[in-house]
Length: 457
Image (cartoon, rainbow, N blue to C red):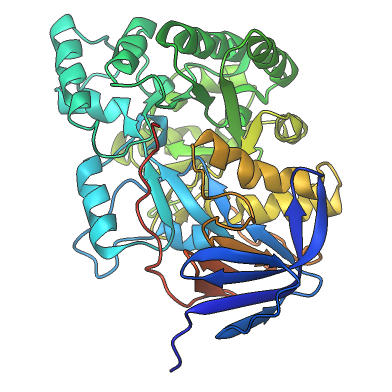
């Protein structure tokens, strides 16, 4: 087999984010880096003819959930393979306050064995709470526990974490002051905070205002997680207006959103506490259980409470949001695309395998709710800049060769709520760090990704 050290992509349509258009260009890749763009005459070990295809920077998923690697398995990765198949080359885990294993262990494994995609990682607040012995999500931390958490956080300063993520809804006892104090325990105000809101529906606007206040008091940037599941219940316009107002006042506030009208989380979580159906104006049958022994079963009252009690860690999907408001969020200039992907084996929500192709196929091509280049910016250069990734997110000389080649006429998600891991159509090649990781729906090399340290400089 001939070793491929150089790749040339010819005749492709490359997004020009500065001028908001696509231009036909050749792209030369050498030693993992883009070395030439334009009419490339240099020969390469491998040439890809991308005529009528988009040669995009690899998609960057600013919000996903592969935080627990099963080291007893021959291959401990799962979600990241589905990320790769939908064109993602860099993923950010540890969101919503949830690390399910020590961040240092995760990072060490990726550094030693590499991964299907490049990884970045948050340190989760709820993980740290559990580490200091807080086993009741409905109570606040004591002053002693708060000091212990601050000390814990200092142990992660040199690991390359993006910052701290918070899952406030999942720990209702968390006070705003605790969130701010832990943010200040970081050794730089250049870290990024991300947060899953305190409450949705009629409390969504107040929840967003709380996150803006946290950013203000900590003097740190705030990434609002999956704003669709927070506000797409009749409150999106007001939520976006509040964020826009804060941004105009100089606050560093952005958000992300997945393109679905249903959220997914663990059935035993506080998201399904008493009163949830009344506020959503929904009923038990709007909840889909995704794992055995109730796989693909809609809830009855009896089944809902049985699953909550006997299988609290089962992933459930709640069909409670308004799709038009999800689209409205994605149209906002300060909202990125993020999958919020979480699976257990083959069970979960289709967003982990379909989010990026769904935006490009259904919202760009079919319904024309989004412009193609603008949508790509929300998947590439926008999140790259947010994550301080100076070498990713754009097709420019000197940038990392993380590239996704797709057919804009056929790209489409196939994952459904009954079959949530089906790969999309239209992704032709994915290149990670200058080598071919995916061709069609086949993973060619699932160990090209590295751990990427967050750049504080």
